[in-house]
Image (cartoon, rainbow, N blue to C red; front, top):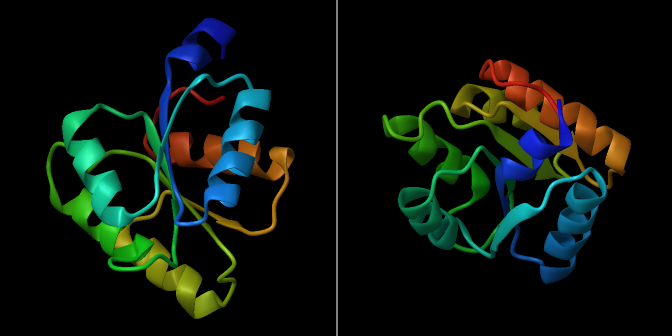
Length: 135
């Protein structure tokens, strides 16, 4: 994919930990993305998703209030966002939890800690899951 197309992709990073949001944002910038938005909760993210058109959402599982799985279910339940690629970033690596995330409609699953190459691979998988050009 060309750099100019990559630069137009709007990405939403959702994590309740500011440090993790900064780390992921830095990795995305290193991969060539520059339209990166952040949310610290599922509720904040849902408001942003309703107001903006994002190309992909990167979401933590464990957050105060509604967790990432609840957010994914909400995204999938609404026609306007049902096809939005969602990459789950979490330290939960139990096969039952991965199956729960898949059942909720996650596009790809990335276990923390991860590096830029892992992130790029999972981004490509998430875009493929929704038939979008890959990174």
